[in-house]
View (cartoon, rainbow, N blue to C red):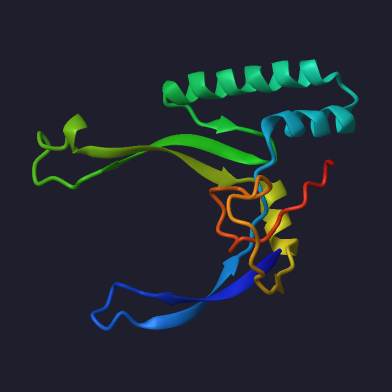
Amino acid sequence: MPYKVIKQSFGFDETKTEKYVAKAVTGGMLPFKKVCNQVSQICGAHRGTVVLVIGGLLDVMVNNLDMGHSVQLGEFGILRPGLRAKAQDTEEAANAQSIYRKKINFVPGKMLKDFLEDLSVTRTTVTASKSNSSNQDPGSDDGGEDWVDPTT
C-alpha cells in the first residue's frame, strides 16, 4: 500500500504543534457495477445473478442488524449494531435521548487480518493533478493522485 508523509497541525495543544505523519494514499472508489462485473468474471455467474445475490445479502444484513443481531460474513468479518450515548448520573436519564450516534461496528475476520498482516507499505511522492478528476474518489485522502481502474 502506498503512503505519503504530510505535515499536520495538531490542535489539541495550545501551540498548534506541527508534526509529520504517514497517511495512506488510496485509490478511487470501485463502483458497484464494476464490483458485480468482477465477481461475475471470477465466479462464472451471470452479472444479473450477482446483482440479485448481493442485493439479497444486503437485505438480510439490514433486517438482522435492525433486530439487533450480529451478522457474520464468513472469513471477511462480523457486522454488529452499536450505539454511542452520553453517560448519565441516573438510570432514568440513560434513555433514548442520551443516544447521540447509531453505528455499525465491524470486526475483521481471518481473511482481512491475514491481508493486513501481509500488507507491505511503500512511500510514494505526491504529484499535483487535475482537480475533480472523474477517476478520483471524492472521499479519499490521496492528495490528488490519479487512480487507475484495474478493471478497464
